[in-house]
Length: 171
Image 1 (cartoon, rainbow, N blue to C red):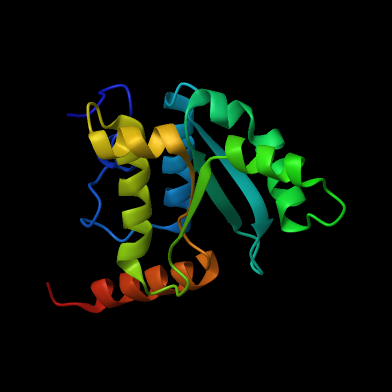
Image 2: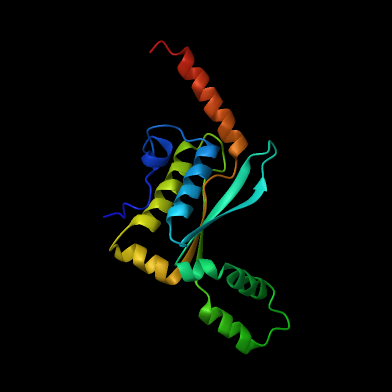
């Protein structure tokens, strides 16, 4: 079962995943809607802009406490990335308190149409699922980072070409 307070793709974008080819802007709109409804369990960050100026975003999903502690988690991960000069006891403490970090990267190529929809569906499932032992374990033990699309410019070109093809179709 799913929490009705978490909006579906249909509620936000007007269609279910797989019914339409989502745009890069659609991914951002949907992830931000999930963030707003998440009760602090999700955070969307724009980490860069594409060559053509489109936003590149990631969504962090975890417990509200874990999302509130993102700066501390980032500092700990930075320490572990270069632990030279850090006492072993401190390294051990960081490892013990740190969540598993799962980074899900989708859509390297603009014409990979299912990957972005998969990202939206997995974000929805993680935030809306109720009484799901797998999701409960993921939320308890990890921090999930979802990158819905690495190439919004290629996606925009693919969507434009797809629309041109539909317009030329005799249907």
